[in-house]
Length: 185
Image (cartoon, rainbow, N blue to C red; front, side):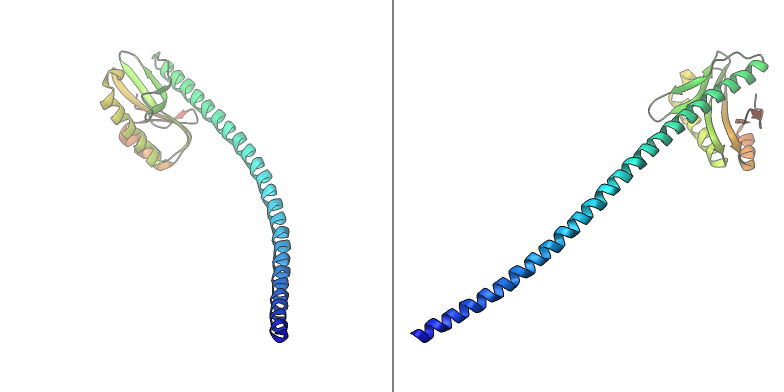
């Protein structure tokens, strides 16, 4: 019986030694994981702070772009009204919404004439074609808002030469940095 008892004791001691080794390995892994988690937490915190700075900068840029866009729209409407006045035409233009999909930076109407268009920083042929298509769709949906002759206008700070050709082809009044590039009126 003593032999059995010694064999059982040795077996339990061996198992205990193996368990202690496993526990030590787990403790070591836990310490390493804790250290890695602390490092990752520090990195995440730094990234969070960096993202906060980026978000603040993006908000500033967004506000600046909104101000520039509003400024460009205002400038476009003033220039269009001035050029019309030089021709003896008094129409007040302003941005307008037909619905959520159709917003135009320039719109004004009288009994004889409707002016409608957009203001852009840079204009290429695609922008001219897109504007003409949008105006055509709006005219079909809201014909009562288009009295007299309809003039599509595109005001920009810079027009590509091909845009001038396309604007001329479609009869779009293209004004580049306060200078008329086409004269459909």
